[in-house]
Image (cartoon, rainbow, N blue to C red; front, side, top):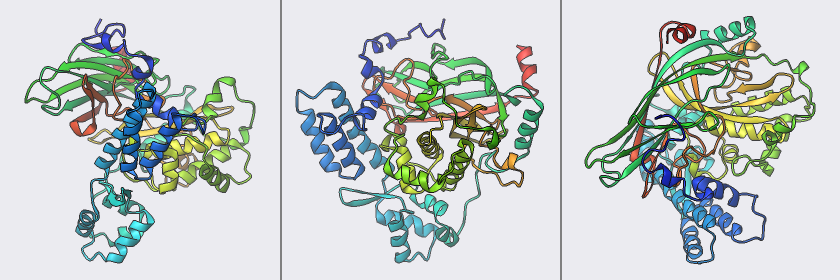
Length: 508
C-alpha cells in the first residue's frame, strides 16, 4: 500500500542502511556536543563547544580555521566531524540571514524615516533594536532588521512615515470565536468543542535546476497526528506523486515522504491533500485547586533541561526569581511567567538552526517570535518544577490567512495537561476567562504537526535539516546533500468546509 510505512519508494531502503547517528541527522550530535552534556576538559567535545562559541561570537574566520584543523585530524570521531561540518553550514546560513551592511540598512530605514538622523541610527543599533551581528569585525544586519525595529521600539515607530496595514491572524485579538469555545466548553463534558472540518493542501516547489537532471529529490511535508479533543478524523486525500510514505502516528514530527526525479529546466513540485476535524478547547484554571504534589515519574522528562535550547542558565534563573518572587502555587507561577514572556515584543526571527540556545536568545535579545517565546516559557516553567512540552503547526482563517505557529502545553494537577499560547498571549478583556483564554485554551483555527521539537523524521533524513527545531514548511534533500530554504518554497492553503464536522464524518 502506498501509505504503509513499511513500503519504501525509490532509494528509501538505501537510507535505512545509514548508521543511527547519521539517520537522526546532525541535530543530535550538535545538541549533545555543543551543550553541557559534554563535560569540561574532555576532548573532542570541548573542540565542538569552542567552535560553537566562536560562531556565536561572530569569529567566523577563527571558527573555520579550527574546523579545518580538526577535520584534518584522522582521529576525529565521525559524530564530531558532522557537528563541525554543521557549524560550517551554520555560518553560511547566518550570512544568508544577515545580508545587509550599514549603508544598505540606513537606505532601507530612510525609506521609512526620510529625515533619519545619524544619532538615531547609532542609538537603535547600540540598543539592539536594529538587529545586527559583528562577523569578523564587520557589522552585518538582519534582513528584516528595519521592519522589526518598528515592532520593538516605540520611538522609531512614531517616526515612521507610513505604517503598513496590519496582517494579524484571526485569533490574535479578542474575537467571537473565543466566547464560542469558552461557552461550549462550559456546556460540554468532552475536551474538544466548536469543531471545524478543514481541507488542506500543502506543497513544496523546488527551484528549476536546483540539482542535476535525473537526480532523485526527496521531500518531507508535515502531516498532522490524531490528538483526541484537538484534531481527529484525519484522512489523506492524495499526494503528488501518488506514491508516498506516511509516517506512523507515533512520529512526534509527522510527515508524508515523497520522491521525484528532477527534470532539466523545470521546477519540481510535491504536494499532499488531506482533511481533518479541528476543535477548540478551554479550561479555566483555578489556582486554589492547584497544589504542589509529587509528579508521576513519566513527567520527569518534562521538568528537565534539554540542551541546547532548554538550559537553566544563570540569566534564566535570575529572570525567574525576579518574576516569580516567593510565589509557590504552580498556577500562579505559571500566570506570572506567562505574562512576563507575553510582554516580550514579537519580531520576525532568524532561522532557528542558526541559534545555539533559543530560550537564552529570546531572553537576551528582548524580542522573539512564537517558537522562541514558547521555548523560553517552557524553560522557565521547567525551572520552577512545572512540566511543559512543545506543539507547533499552522494557523489559518476562513479567508486567505495562514502562518507558521508554535505554542505549548503545561501540566497542572488536578487539571492535567492544558495548552498555552504565550505569543497570542493575554486578550484585551475584563473577563478573566477570556483574558487568560490562552493559558488553558486553544482556538479551532490551528493544525498541529509536531508534538515535540527536534525529533527524527520517518524515514530519517540523511543530510542536515534546514529547520533543526520545528517542522512546518517541510524539508528537501537529494543524494548530494540538503536543499536549504533559498532553493525551494512552500505553499499551504486551508479551507473550512461547509456544515459541521459530524455531518462530514457521516457523509464519507
